[in-house]
Length: 171
Image (cartoon, rainbow, N blue to C red; front, side, top):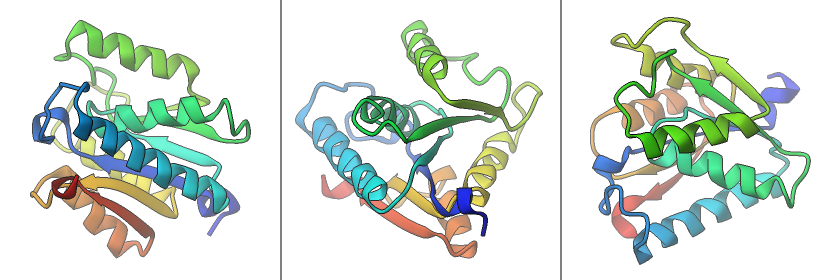
């Protein structure tokens, strides 16, 4: 395992439509989740992780990227890579979400386009595989449902990387 991969962590989790609070980021449960994520990330940093990869999807990916950027003020040795699944990822997004996404990209240490084409069936899975293949830790927010998050967790198990799960049903 390369030294970089040894200290790399990636994230997976649900989009807002699969979170109990949807797009409303003002409730107590959202803040509890954000706090739990921050604690998991700080634990990873304290265990030597310095490189973090976000898939930049709406929901958990964006939230984790924002947490990393805020933590960079305290831990100046950490870096954020944004793994973009396709060149038109934000095509169907609302303006606010696109502005938030672009702000993160402007502060990212590295931007990787996993595919240099427009959206196609399978580009999100390719992005998830890229993240797991280049990491030794996966931090995820999961509700137990089928979908991309579950597939990413299963792939991480197959690749035998460490997995930290926050069960969204217990927040």
